[in-house]
Length: 264
Image (cartoon, rainbow, N blue to C red; front, side, top):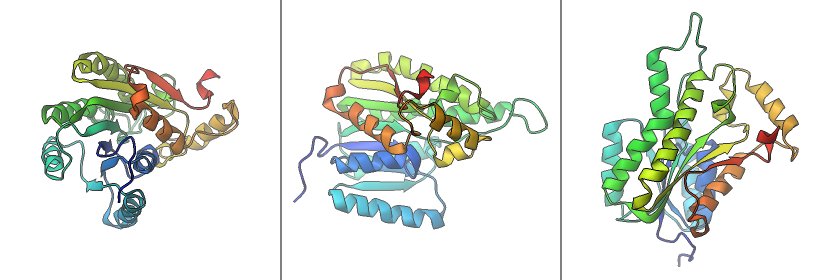
């Protein structure tokens, strides 16, 4: 017999759920009864243990997890997947949360032999910002969103200050923050609340790809008032809280989840 939870019968769509913030959110929401459609990009070798973990989480929490190893940035893939979700029993009005946790982009300087190109910037901005709008529009048009849906994007301190090699991602994150403000207003009539979470420096796979990430982690540990660096689970807990009925009135916010790191 399935257990009754606040999210029983509801769904979340996680864009970028194989590691880091996305995977931690899968674990947290599943533990609270949310069914999940999880999109990611992995090789056949790395996907095998991931699928085993998804199956174990689903069985333990008596929820459904639909894994999709696809390119979430493709227009064709997005439209096809929206149709597939309807056929997998997601149903009209059942998607409570859309989390954008895609970390794909170019980590290059603005000048030099390997400088960012216009195409690099356009790709990174679409991957980490504008794609959220396309997913929102298509899911809304299909009637899959709940009457009280939450859309959450993830940003970082690098959107507001200099990090080496982070220019394209910084542009994308700043764009995402601006986009979320407009989505908060223009999608509100459909019952959608849009918010952004700014995580503290977190030792994810994506962070470790940034030049000088070891120094960022060191700084994060030393300046955090609570004496430790942010973990993916800290962010997943905020995503969970923003998905609850009690967060109904939170819309258009940028919420720091960093233990006060941003205060220094």
